[in-house]
Length: 292
Image 1 (cartoon, rainbow, N blue to C red):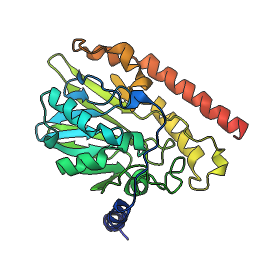
Image 2 (tube, one colour; image 1 turned 30 degrees about the vertical axis):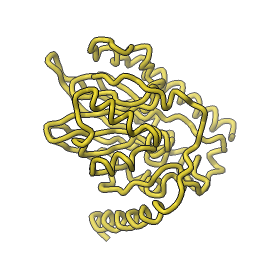
Image 3 (tube, rainbow, N blue to C red; image 1 turned 120 degrees about the vertical axis):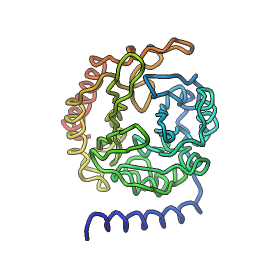
Image 4 (cartoon, rainbow, N blue to C red; image 1 turned 135 degrees about the horizontal axis):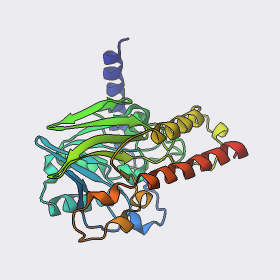
């Protein structure tokens, strides 16, 4: 079976799964993290890249000449906030043409189905997260437990490592960074302003989310090699500025206060990025060494 036929068949299966899943009830976990749903003033990061998420759950808007791209949506209740944030910047939610996610966990996918319904935008996802996205998190190796954690979303395009997403004058390259989820991913692309262009990394940091030994997760037999691959891959990336899936992961609130002037330079801290990866490498190494 050629790759086009395989993708067509998989998309059909996933679409049918989504229809069935919609009939079931969603149980979004409550982890007592008020910062995940707290409001935060949207702002321009660099060029045509904007922060439109909550206080800690990062959502990014990339504007183009042919419509906009939205990456991540936070919790289910965050849809009105994201819409308001986009409008506060002078844009329209209805102009969203492409939806992306850095990982298929409920805290980044919660409002995705609602936003897709409001906009008609095309949902694109890393192949590794395609099944969990269409069953609403039920099959997630760490959190699922056969419980739907968010409303399933119909997939319009399945992405693989280094696939390019194009819209208007923008091109984003998806980087497959599995471990945190089977299809965790980062995005790398260029934006520009009146001064210069910037190579931007939206990084999905490979934090460990399971307390189980990696060898005790039959649903994800390649988890150890995936984390090892991702840590190595991310250390080799070159970029001008970086942000992440959570505001706390790149110290957003130390770098930018509501009302601050436009200043892309505050997001150019490569040393901080390397330190984060070094810490995560040590956490990974400790887990492997302990067998827990």
